[in-house]
Image (cartoon, rainbow, N blue to C red; front, side, top):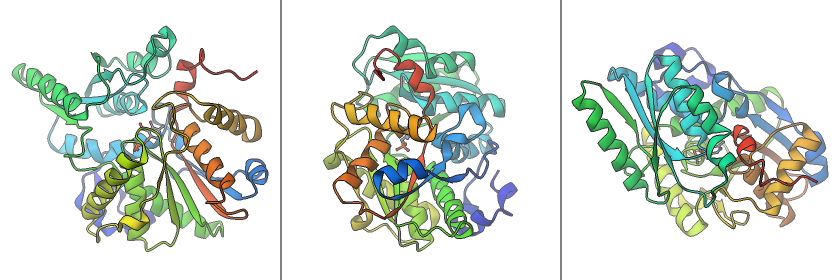
Length: 349
Ligand SMILES: Cc1ncc(COP(=O)(O)O)c(C=O)c1O
């Protein structure tokens, strides 16, 4: 729980965290590394915050978020955790891993969010790992209705209660508090310390913007630290007209969880230029970004989240919205297991 971490410097930068239970998923301070070859090609100074390198279950941003979802689950003495996500969800895979680490039973619901019948997509990558973790898997033939997805989880939880179990639900919908964003405020505090230690004067922070838990936590962290850095959110799920108000709401909720003032709407920046044709579907820019990261830096980014976010960063530089010579931190949120699920769709020749 949270009190185990009070000694960490980054924790002390965010006093509001002390009010929130945190399960220990063994996170590490992830490296902040220069990406010189890719940065030189783009004409910027580029650093990568390697949140893909968390030790649990092949890592990723969801480890930090799950600590704050599963803290309350442990407080409530839950024995089972339910979660919903896309078929190739990293959140689901990491929740199953976290459950196993904490001695809980994972029940997962996989939603049909991506229009494909490719058997590799349906069974490889994260699905293979869900099975390895022994998660009880349910399917939902629908992927756009968060309330429906949550209602199905609640009904599965009710059935479990009737059998004498004590389930805890990690909800997706925006009517539930964005507890996971606390993990990203903490990541930003860690990053601020690292930039000071490494003498880096970052001007932009580039993050994926999906459910918005990461993006809103980053915004809340930046505000709590009074850091004058621009946060660029790259839309990976919804277009700007939907994502912008979603992040404004979630970021202010995250700020409230931290006990700080609400986020001003002007600091919320969402870009959807590389989203087409839609969530989880490749486009040429995403493929090029995946290839560039691999061939210039030896780094793996994925087709759904981190590859799309890198594609968004590259487009912002090309458009001059991130000026030449800027100092940019790309938050690498992981997702590489999905590369295997997309093997029939990627074309690197
Ligand atoms: C690897 C990866 N990166 C980024 C995201 C988007 O983060 P968020 O849902 O917090 O917006 C996800 C979400 O599942 C993810 O799995």
